[in-house]
Length: 125
Image (cartoon, rainbow, N blue to C red; front, side, top):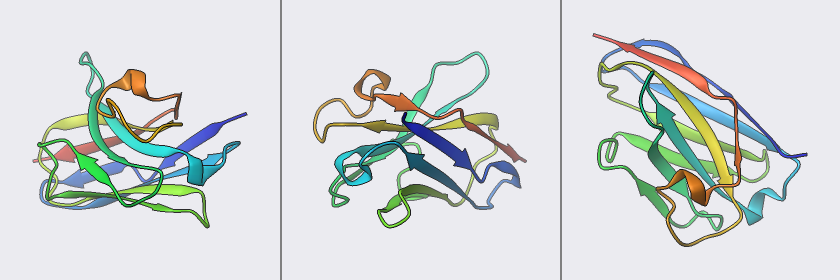
């Protein structure tokens, strides 16, 4: 049974930083690409970042490029999202996700196979 468990969310002031973690189990971590999406209340889930299973390619939404960094630690079966210079935008839920593929429409939710339950991030002004 595949499980993705996010942590690290919380309340932070604009300009601050947070690091999200996602621990995985039930899958061969090195064989999966890992991604992060976020969703504001009443809005669609949107792509944030993905790291292809090799770890050598990363992709970011334009809105976070230069501020967020996705990384993975195969020894810990964990993917991280380092978020710096956070902008005030209320509360988003951040979701960890995984895909058993390394090419295609990584920015679309349908590309992914499994999802975590999410962790909330609130950025105050």
